Length: 423
Ligand code: UD1
Image (cartoon, rainbow, N blue to C red):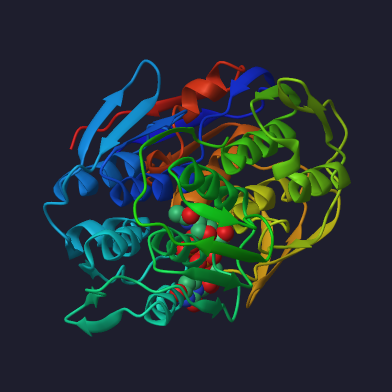
């Protein structure tokens, strides 16, 4: 398993290109199942997770072409040859569960493994299944598999989610595009990825209104056509580099990053004493000297502070002049990075879903272990700011969600390298 070695203390200066959003790309890939014509996705990230999704789609009969030079993925689901997503595939990546709705909508049945547990909490799929039931699907769970059938097609329905779920909103949207009649989704997620999915589906001929608000209306159509769509910029990747520049100091342009998608983070960064400005080409993040100031925040659905940036923000606040409080309201058990950050000298006390971070003047490099995707990158951020060498072990988590992390940071002056470990 590869490791990443960082010698901290070098400020970051330069331009970092921001790629397409992983979390959007995975659902857009699932959308390819809805049409017999090709769906072409531009600005695709090239990640372990997106490759994995492509493999799953291929096993269902989708013809896949990846054009590396232009970062374009062509998916053609002329025929669906299988409607089964086996345990081994869904277990590895929760988002692969998202093939269920499109298969159900297009073919009328599907058998998809339950995603199972996950390091950051229980993460059930009950809201997804309730939405399909409301649309008339028969659902049985047998031996860890969801068997869903709507042999005469899905029907439009009014569905009010009891709380906001990104995945359930997207999944219900995907399925409702081909349902008979109108579907109204209430109390939905408003993440930029939801708007991106709606834009792509509408380009394919779907009739979706209200994405980005709390209520989405979808008028079902009989079939969808092909389309070309460019994946929205990854706000989590952009936010991660913004926090890295804040922690290490320097002056970085995040090319392609969207100011309007990062407002909650920008508020925290500015509160911490970091300069953030919107420019024509992206976001500029600057910090030259001066201690980080403490900031307290809680994670919330969009437009609140994203849970996927909580670990990285904690790494920054470990260096603040005073105490910050971080409350995690989306996932239980999402502070696994805290004990690892403590190995670098951070002072963090976790009580339930709240972490109290007492800033220290400096962190000191140490060997640490990556536990999940966002936690891993928080250790990289801490390592960039720490004195001496930090070695992050088990970095395969990082490869699931960050493309070219080390080269992008190294191009800005970071002393970071991957130590390849032969298996
Ligand atoms: C997506 C993102 C993930 C991000 C999360 C919240 C992808 C691939 N992943 O995950 O990176 O951290 O949004 O912004 O896009 N829940 C239920 N029942 C359900 C569905 C969800 O109880 O049927 C709970 C979850 O356990 C969690 C909360 O709802 O506590 C929110 O989860 P959700 O918004 O669905 O997250 P994901 O879509 O899984």
